[in-house]
Length: 399
Image (cartoon, rainbow, N blue to C red; front, side, top):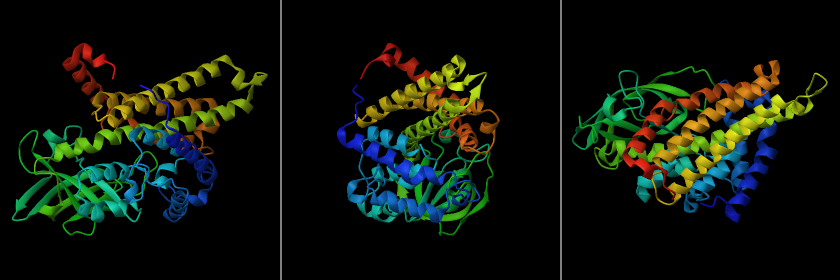
């Protein structure tokens, strides 16, 4: 496996790095840039999105014919990592969750006519999307096939939806929704995926759930469905293919989280490095203390391991593989590394790191969710163990 980036992708990576440094990093220290949920205000986001489009950095994952850059997955990894050296980067380039994962799966399964209606407005940045699967207990969590309670009852040429979802990312700002609901009791083919528009009647946002960390645009919401009617033509794939659609979406989406988190981990380490180069303690700069060097070196090592795991999984996806174990390994390691990088940086900055004088407070609270979203780390460890038990020594094969 050769992880050398092609000249075109390397040029885009450098261009992204320069764009982040020139257009985004200066905004992070300005209180007037933020909304009440600690994210970039939408009017200011539109300004930087226009600059990203002009710079040729828009929608790295989408086809060129639809206004994107049509990069391979290894190209996503290189660009997304650079983008998330700013907390505003992924949204500025239109590669932030949940739109990123939704665009990728819709691009795989929709007809061209459906893409014009449901996908193109998301690519263009004219509206946002959301993926509605998770439910309050005892409903769907890490085991949607066995636990989902939201029902889709077919009546003529329409499906009628009843149920409840929660922790649905971006729902308060979304217009296009992907909904997973139960259409039968079959363990593997009991779920079906649908599209609906935010203006359709028969559903409502119960609340925007307050969370520990900063919130993405649209937050995480609890939704109630009480008679939402979805026409049959807005079903994704066939009836009973909801779990398949979910797997098509979540595999690459988990990996794109890793790509972005590596950028945030690097940012945390950069904040720490700048501080220890100047801060004096016991007659010498912190950077010259061996204990500090060991802390920084440990995080740098973990970031590089995460990059290699992520790139291997991206490479395998580009070769047409599913990369299930590779994605799970990257997800576990990079989630832990992001938290470790932020925590180490807080420790090295001391009281300043614990304050809101730097972005470490923002990153630290954001990082705690990484071990939960798109499958808790424990679930991914279980999946790896199952693959090991099934494959035996072939689990370790190259290529």
